Figure 1 (cartoon, rainbow, N blue to C red):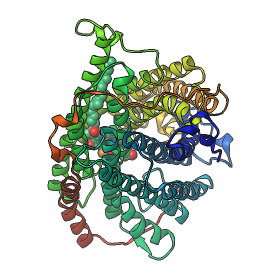
Figure 2: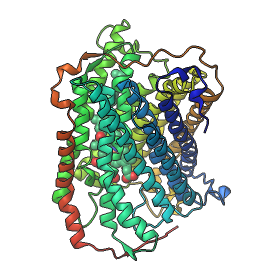
Figure 3: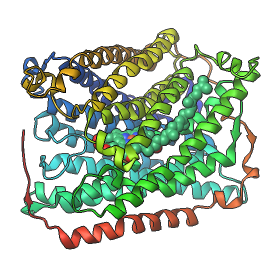
Length: 564
Ligand code: HAS
Ligand code: CU
């Protein structure tokens, strides 16, 4: 691992060690998404009837092994490693102090890296073709489960490192409000640490014992319920770091100020409270779970919609302050004054635009009755490519263009190419996601090698004829996304290792100023105990009855299945 942080001008940074750790995390994240995006391109070709997998033997055996690699590398590794690196960077610059336990932070990185390698090997040997949700009773090699468990455990250590640093900062700054960006980083990891207990329980009590042959069977419904206890809040673990940038960096980058600091804190506290007790909205069609609790979770899902609506309002108002500060006039004139050619900002605004549609789609998903029409269809794939594939991924790409020069001590390579990459991702995602949404409304199933399915063309399923004219657009969008992805990897690699060294360190990092500052918010917004306690109580109330009922009414009698 190249320890560049000590070799470049920013080595004078008081946080050189943390910046080096950030470069490790971000380096692994970019390597993962490079492979994951390429495989995604092959998946999109398959939908258009171009099946390259026979030519990739013995490296990738099937569409389903490709889908597992695509989902795990992009949705689990790219996100988690980028988030750990970015949030550590943000925290030390917001607290203006180094981590209290840098050694533990470094060790956590290595533990998580070992976890990724452990999970990757069985995926590559076709011994873990279980998709990124690894639903029981599908059964992968035990090292896949142990590897992912190490990654999750690593995120708990990141939470610990951030919390200990917070305590130290608190002692050094009695009575001061937590800097907003640090507050947000901590809230993100606190929410995630509560949420990931579901996944950890599934691994420890179900998947690992079964895959190690310690138990004969598993309990699919209970395992799925524990998975989705984590499975919904994980999307906010992916989203909130992008929000940290939209709230605390982008307003300054567009020349404006954040509209309201207290409103931003309320939004993150609502995510801390409401992200986890809503996961049954992924299981509306699951048997064995009471309709009452499914409905309670549906209402909870509508409630967790609100912190994003607050974000919508707060962020757009902040963009407007920037647009007007740059001379924008009239009701919409300010929009054209935003820095549309700045690759460290514009792709994030494009990500916001895509996310607005992804979010509306999420509301449709959450509608108990309407969900029956789109559940397990291509619609869902369209939804999450607008959310994790755009709100998160396109924002992280743009943040990379800002972060890499700071931690690698080199200029951003080919800024115009970086900007083109952002616009290509935006355009490609519109084509790709729109096609999938439309196919989903025509009942096309997700997670299916549809391009090669005989029924696609033999007329045995009449509605399939309506998919045929739309499927090529999945490949067209996927191809544009692949070109954009290659440009992203190219710009990042050249920036990290080959572009001009910064002969003078960049100016110290600055967060956005605010129009309404932290002092305008209630002091309780800056306390953790009440909110974390309430969050845990809400999870117990929302899930306790269902988990107890499943424990009483279902058993571990489903043998593990290897269906590939
Ligand atoms: Fe979702 C399924 C509901 C958000 C990801 N979601 C998924 C899956 C994934 C995923 C990966 O209720 C599939 C999992 C699987 O494999 O089965 N989702 C929601 C709801 C929200 C939501 C209500 N999802 C996300 C986010 C994700 C994500 C965020 C990743 C990062 N989702 C569901 C449901 C399902 C589901 C069901 C299960 C479906 C099924 O049946 O399987 C909400 O949180 C969305 C709130 C968002 C908004 C938008 C706010 C807009 C903002 C930007 C404003 C700025 C602008 C800029 C427009 C309210 C903040 C303006 C620009 C100028 C220049 C002015
Ligand atoms: Cu969800």
